[in-house]
Amino acid sequence: MTTYDSDSSGAEDNFTETNVLLGYATKDETDDNVSHLGGHPEWLDSKTAPTGALARCKTCNSYLSLLLQLNGDMPGTFPGHERRLYVWSCRKKTCRRKDGSIRAFRAIRVSKEAMARAQTAKAVPVAASESKKQQMNLGESLFGAKPLTGGGANPFSASSGSSVPPNPFASSHTSNPFAATSLLAAKPPQPPTLQLSNLTDSFADKLRISSPPHAIRQPARPHEPWPSESSFPDPYPIYNLDADYETLDAEAPMPPQNVRMQLDVDGEFSNSAKDMKGEYESEIDKTFQKFADRLSQNPEQVLRYEFKGQPLLYSKLDAVGKALGDGRSGNAGMTRCGNCGAERVFEVQLTPHAIMELEAEEEGLEGMEWGTVIVGVCRLDCQPGDVGAGEVGYLEEWAGVQWEQTRK
Image (cartoon, rainbow, N blue to C red; front, side, top):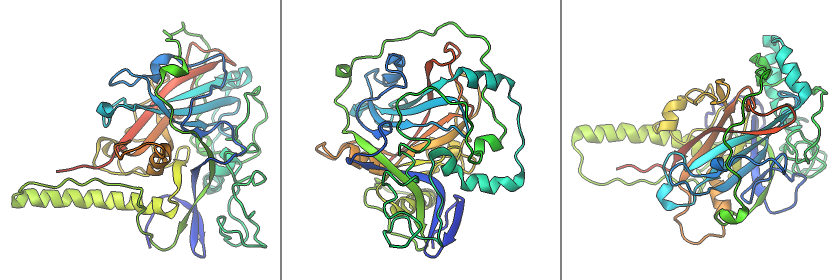
């Protein structure tokens, strides 16, 4: 049996459900018209695009291609906030494995009422006894997803008489975190609501965080016009997204074929060099094996979502792995928010199967070379100081890229 660090909601029979929401790419229509892989971006306000500087590779200054657009609304944690996440990548081979070739930014619109409430809000402690309940219901608070019921029925099965609907991704099933009825659902821009969710508070409330005040509006920052679609490289094919809670089998699986680790071992080694090489490989193999084992449980996942959760590390020996440490805190090593100075927390990561889906129409094998892309966001969900209440702003967030392993 494989050991996993992530907290789970309990094991029943042959599987365990965790707090992680997995996203799956599909060409079929879904109730979500916001979240998608590939294609072109859509903004919270069609008249307010981000600065074009966010669309450029920091290495070659060319325009990037969209990998992911994700609806990030969390009314239970950030009432009155509309938010989306965007992840981008440079298509040029010369920019692969270089810093700034993959970028992420967040769109945010805060209502007048939410902004006023943030200025006067006071922290409310959350009892330790409620911690477990909050954690177990995080997905419900974020997505409207329902935890397992009925004696551990497998949500992926279609057995009759089960309390779980046969198709967990059907439009009538509320466990789809990207469905129209969910809180991460695809909805056209609507006036923010003041009604607080009746669901349990999430990790953000447990940590007594609140949005920073925005009493004084700052001067407008330099803004580069957003380029026309024709200025970008041909987009990746677009996929809709379905999602459900991660389930893990009790027995250890075989690693999935779509997760790659490139090994380049050559040359002669002294005894000491061989010993160092062996220790290095042992640590890499241990972390990578855990990564591969975990993904193989649900091999078609293209993303993993758990706000303030734990990223699943591809390696512990690269720059990102060393910065994040054991990954238990979910934010150690991430740079602080460049806008408000708050800590960043893990929100979403892309998995290797996303590459397979995005590059399905491309010839050759020289495509994207990352093992995972980890996105960390401001834990306060702040907005730019030059953006007023009810207006849309954009802020770059932390993108930690773990590249496929190569070593000599």
